[in-house]
Image (cartoon, rainbow, N blue to C red; front, side, top):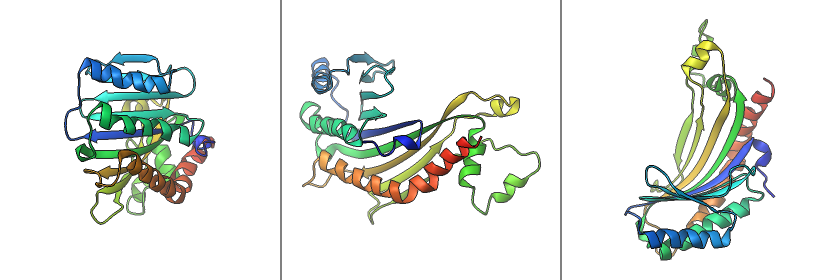
Length: 247
């Protein structure tokens, strides 16, 4: 069961592994890696290369949910949009992390950063920045700016990053991304677009000698879910959801 699906229009869990060294780019290596992923998830049958050279394997986009995996020169990404169960997404990401040391020669020493990211998209037709400011507030120091006669909020995308240990190697970041521009505000015409909330727990640097990528990722998941429950759902996601519902 997915406990987060009711919080937004779309929910997704992504894994990003940034490496210090370039990933292998040989044809046999790339195809062998994606064939192994497809063996586990046969519905991931769409393989293509982007114009920038990134390799992508993904499911069809019209099913309401989607798995995808990408290989970039120094990054491996795995995503699952609207999973039926959080464990389904984590299983996919753990498979990728299990494969990369053997099939892409990525050792725990080669880790620049490993992310567990949870994303929430809210469809809204209106001024995104104004809605975010209304739902979450701007802090007492800036409240007066919202009272300026005739003002319109053009950009308000709050973000905060915190260290979770003394070394600052493990961090959590909350970011809100809006998609309203000045032209839309000036004309008063707004297409229905997504307000996105991204919550990421990241581990920087080479992994501990006794930990694998999968074990570290599991730790990041536990931390992310705990912080989400205690500091994000009722403080950020619910207010945005309620503000949109009243418009």
